[in-house]
Length: 182
Image (tube, rainbow, N blue to C red; front, side):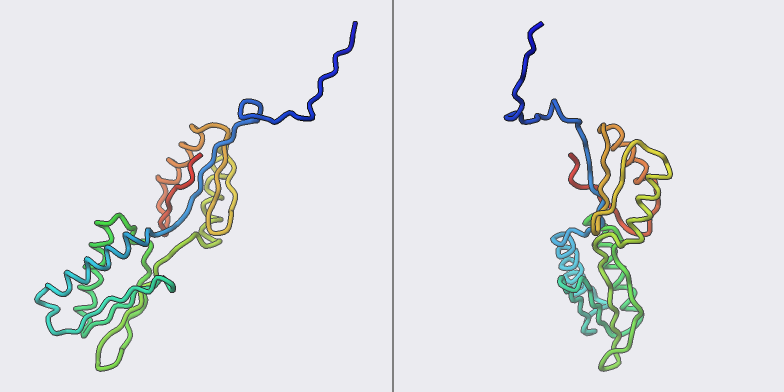
């Protein structure tokens, strides 16, 4: 029988020849534009509210440092200011878990100042918590930490959907979003 030789040197694998993998990323981010809009709405409400008239109340957003600085005259106004901000965040679909209120401290002129940290990115302990949850459920997907995100890879989209449903059913103390679904 004659031997047939096939030259595969120019062969490029296509999607049909490679094992298909699907993936998504788990992140913890705040939409900066929505955050800015929520803060601007809160500022407008403070300007219009009667209980804040003449109190020199300010809300400062530092996007580089990812902090809010609340500055007002007394404790009652500081609590009302936090409620206004929380309400505007909820309306803009920003999770309140992304905000970490610091301790109120005395500022110049017998006023109060409070720093609010805006959490962004999964910390290593949070990423470990997410990957451990997926691995403990013995799902047919792999989860691996990549910087401040977790990549989940599986052979079928249904398996990835199951992983997403599992994660949505959990109560984490940090917000999570799902991106780069491929």
